[in-house]
Image (tube, rainbow, N blue to C red):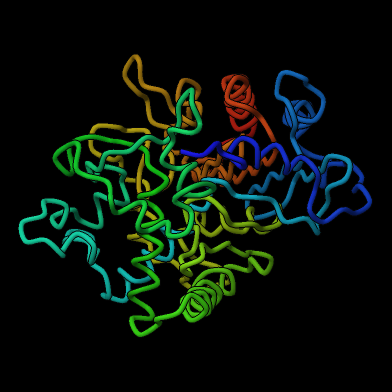
Length: 365
């Protein structure tokens, strides 16, 4: 295999320079209250151990109480999602389940798995894909980036058709029995959305137009996320596991959507049963739901992307590579969005700091 010229890690490093350069915004909290939280929030911009925080937003009771940007960033910037995009894709799937166009416990309509009679992958359900328990063989990451299925499909020799790369994987486990985090699984889900809403779309451009329209009509428009955009592969498949972009405030609006049980400005944008579903633990791993991470206690040896040792247990989040977080805490009526560049070697201190920040804010009845 040729040497990766643009691996996940190299591309991430290139994003250290903002795509929309502008004058820095004053690093002043919006609210003068909640003094106990302010030093913990400011520490994200001053503590070397947490590496690079580019933007931080805290919403409580639906109101911004803290908003700060690093120099060179501001409200006009779009920030990369990395895997926070998975939670967006889940939301779009939920819209189609609400419309009765997809069914959680029916075999996922993946045509590549129905070409050969008796293909066991044809029994994988939509629920199993959403909960990362499909049983498909996968290498998400490892010491050698060139061997990562995700890197190859996003940036290297398999990037021409990400769905083909994702659906070629054989079964490694019985579906529904083993949790295996897989970015390619979410790209299968994004393709399912596109083919469901636009079955006659035969060209990449037609697929992109259909998906962009659906994204705007069912999520970014009603949820008040005007800056949200997502990238596509050459076949017109939304890269819904990895590559969406939105402003800090729009990521906050996404968190608020789920905090408010799917309601925005009095309108039910996401059904309450879908909000409940994404918070339902995946079989075999309590720390993951329906394309959202959960802050549930885990057995020894299991690692969470959140701060389950600190609680609260009702917190859940969209989480992305290099420390992207949109955290929702119903018991505190709280949303915390942290965007930045923190390598895996510093993720433990970052998670601990996020836990301290969340727990410094008061509970709400």
